[in-house]
Length: 497
Image 1 (cartoon, rainbow, N blue to C red):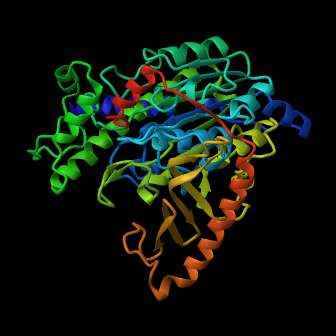
Image 2 (image 1 turned 180 degrees about the horizontal axis):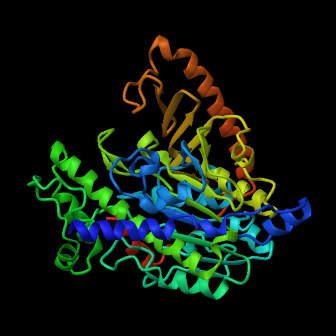
Image 3 (image 1 turned 90 degrees about the vertical axis):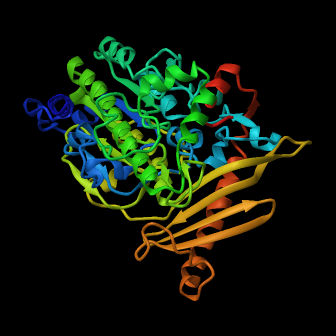
C-alpha cells in the first residue's frame, strides 16, 4: 500500500510539475504581447467545498495536494482569498458575473427549506453578462463541464457557453458512487487545442459525505479509530440502493457530533477527499500539457467556499460566513509571469475583471470586483471584502420586486470581521479581532474594545448595501421551477431532504 501511495504521489506531482523545456521567453514589443495574450486560453477549475488550509501550499503538512502545490510553484498564489457566499450557487455566480449575491440574486436551494420564500429560485437576469459572454465575444470557444447540484443551466450558469455539459454521466460530480472521470474534458481539450478557448471545470469533490476511494480512504486516518463513520465507498453506496437523500442521512447518522475522535476522523477523511480532488486536478492539467495548450493557458484554480468541522458548532456548510466557510484557495498561472505569493486579501468576485484584463477581453462596466493585475507585480492596496448569503427573499405581490428577508453578511478589514444576521427586521451582530482571535471565537460586538471597529465596519457594510441595492435594480431575474432531476441532484448533496 505504501509503495502504491508513493507511486501515485509521484505521478500527480509529475503531471503538474513545470515543463523546464517550455520556459516563457521574451514576448517582444507591446503589440506582440497584446496579440499573444488575446490568443491565450483561459481555464477555470472549481473544486467545490475545498478549504485553503487543507492544501500544502497553505500550510497543510500532509501530502494532500501534490498537483496543486506544484502549480502554486509556477503561479501567483493568493494567501487570503475569500468567497462572496458560504454556499455553492451564489458563490459561483459571483465568480462568473463579478456581482454580489444580492445583485445577481441567484441562490442555493437550502436544506430543509419549508416556506415559499426560502424555496424561491431565480435564474440570472438576461441583462447580466458573464465571464463566458466576455470571453466568447473575444473570439474564444467556450465550454463548461459541471457536477450539477447547484451549478446548473436552469439557474443561468449556461449563459455564454457554446457547450454546457451538465449531464449526470459526464464524470464531473465525483461525489456519488461514480468516480471522477475527466475523459470528456480531456477529449474536448484535444479537439480545441488549436484555437483559443475558455474552459470551466467544476467537481463536487471533496463535498460531503467524505468517502474517498482507495488508497485515499485510509491514507490519512488514524488506524486506532474505532468509531462507526463509514469509509468504504463502494459498500456505502451499494447499501442505500441509489436513494441519495437516505444515503446522506445515513452517513451523518453515524457521526457522534460531541465526540472529538469522530470530528478528527471526519477531518482526515476530508483530507483523503482533498487528495482525490488533487488527482482530478492532475488529470486536467496533464490533458492541457498533452494537447500542447498548457504554455499559452491562463489557468485559475479555486474553490467556491470552505467547510466546517465544528469550529462554530456545525458540520459542512449552511451559508455561514466564518473563516472556515469563506477562506478558499486561489492560484492564477499567467504565461510568462514569475511565481509569487500575494498576502493582500482578495475575493472570488475579482477573478472575472482580472481574467478580462489579462487576456484583453472587454468585461461589463457593472463588474463589482477589481482587477488583481496590479497585485501580480506587488502593487495595489488592500480593501474590505464582503460576503453575503441570502437565505430567504421577500417578493412584492404587486410588482414582483425582490428584497432580502433573511441573510448573513460579513465585512472583513485587515484585522477585523463583522458578521450580521438579519431576519424579519431584526439584526444580530458579531465582531472578531482576527489578530488575537484568528478562529473568530470571541465576540466583541458588545464590548468597549470593539466599539471603534464595529462603527467603521457597520458604515462600510451600509455603504456596500446601498451600492448593491442601486445596481440590483438592473438585474431582476426571472423566477423558475426546478426540474425533478435538479431536485434529485440537490438531495444527493444534502441540500433538500
